[in-house]
Structures are given as structure tokens and as C-alpha cells.
Length: 204
Image (cartoon, rainbow, N blue to C red):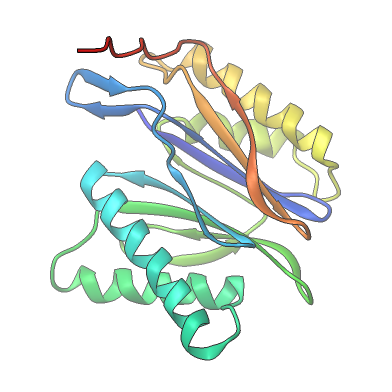
């Protein structure tokens, strides 16, 4: 029951995701970080099959870093999104990745941006986006409350409302969420919203 969503504010972008690692009817852990830092000013939130998600997001992260290493300049957010879309399109005809991506970034000349990339390699630049079962609630809440001139505080308040809606309305709701933000100061973790914690592993 994955939930990944994001939005663009006045001079920032936010991506939030549940942190449950699930297989069949089992929850393996509740602190899985599904939002990867691609570089200093880019975030990539992903949902989908666990193996595909982990392998593909790491593949994109390393290739973005390789481009910057070879050329001395980072990819723009638009270029990184188009590269990601191209890799998904190539894989689609060979061995498809079951992964959906929300990519957020901040470019000095462009400002914040958010890209929606699904598993069949369609790419859209949006102000707000969501994937997973939680998207039913995230999209309706954002349709009602979202504004493109929101401050960070207003956006975080909306994210919290979405998380509460998912927890209260989804039949098998993920308990914990991670929120990350990207702005002119870079990409970073903003907060965790936890309702349960994994039990510590006893020492052998």
C-alpha cells in the first residue's frame, strides 16, 4: 500500500513517501527510505517492486554523479528527468522496471520543479503528483488545498493533512512517512512522521 507524493511551492519542492518495506501480507520494516538524493539539488521518490526500485534508483543516482564527474557540471532537473525517462523507455522493450518516480529539483535559473515519471516511461512536469494507493487521497487533498505560492510551513501542513487522511482512510495504511525538501540551499531530509517504531534487534 505504497504512497509517494510531491508538490512545488513558492521557491521549493517537497517529496514525501511512506517507509514500509512490504512483501505479500508481511511488513518487513517501517523505516525504509524511498526518497533518494540524486545530487545536492535533486530528490527522487520512487514506488514499485522493491528490487526494481532499489536497483533503478541507484542506477540513476550513479549515472547522474558520473555525468557531473565527466563534465564538471551537474545535470539540470529537466535533463535528469529526461535521462531517467529514456532509461525506463529502453528497459520497457527489454526487461521493464516496475517503478514509478517523482523527481524534484532546484535549478538556479529555473527555480523548483517536479516531474512525474511512470513505469511505462511517460514524463510530465507538474506542480503536484502522487503514486500508489495513497494517491487517491493525496491528489484529492492537493486539488482542494494546493496553491503554487505556498510557503514551506503551509506545504508541510498540507503534507501532514494528506498523511493523516491516508492513515485514517486507507484500509492497510502505512504508519510512517519521510518528508524531504529541495530549495536553493540544497536537498535534505525535513522530517519523519512516525506512528510506530521498529523494535530494536537484540544483541547476540
